[in-house]
Length: 282
Image (cartoon, rainbow, N blue to C red; front, side, top):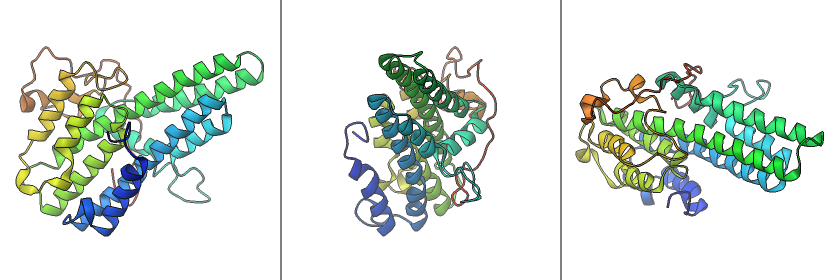
């Protein structure tokens, strides 16, 4: 489903085309929802390209692929080309969510990317065999994927609450709803399949309308599903996401027992809080 077993063309290209033309799966949706879905799907595209390059780097022990993995994740790199340095890629979303939740998942991604680069250097000096290099790259790739899953799970939780707030005008609701669903899609293929399928059925706005929205209902169903399964994916739990930092009322809102841990005592602080991209906010 979604990305793990779905068609790449349907997952990325058709989603963008339908939103661009406001037809097929986006028939009847507002311009605001369609615009934000296109913009945020570009970030999903960057993450999927980064993952593709990571897989190729491991398969071929190819340093060029590892460099391109960084490029697709980071977004704009050279301010001489574009002043929005370090914007427009998944890494920018990681900055924003780390700022919200008091975590350091962007730092974790950077650490994984640098560790992979160091492994290539060790290999070039004859200190790592081909097999050892491949194994180390896989370890760092898993680390990178775990950090990015954490970020987009945090985004899913944030926007599943925000789009359903009482008193929002219809365009603000559509912006938050489209943003949250598209961010969910970015990390869906890294999630536990049962959680991903459950969230997709609840959060996809294209087969629902505003009369389906009850404040906090979908948000709390997602929270409780994440608690129900052993982990969200890559061993992550809600406590790793440090959810109570950004969602201080989550226990009361969602009826969570006081003995459930929702704060990470090892959370790494603030990675910056940049907007994901200048044109679309965070």
